Length: 131
Image (cartoon, rainbow, N blue to C red; front, side, top):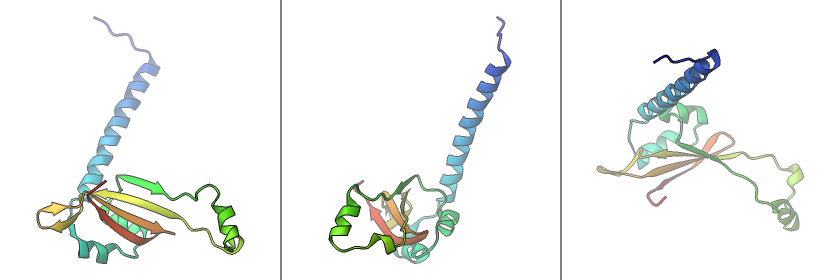
């Protein structure tokens, strides 16, 4: 049986294989970089007030990221209560999520850890089992 492929089909197959290998490679790197487990106190002391760069160096990429968005109509409401948005600086809020990296006892880890960044600095850390 003879397989007849043109040049573009070979390139497309190569691109698909490369994308699959890259995806699995990135996942392996992320999983390897998060192999260390922390206690609650260790985690809070290590990451409170740190930058995204430091968090990424120590934990790798999060499995999920979310950006905070101002709700529709917020400007009108803030104007009614006396807030002056014209003079306020823009605040960027981003949440990063990691799985199973913080122990709450020697045998159990929280299912999810949420790190909230405000203008590139860790401002809030939360641990969850119910998400």
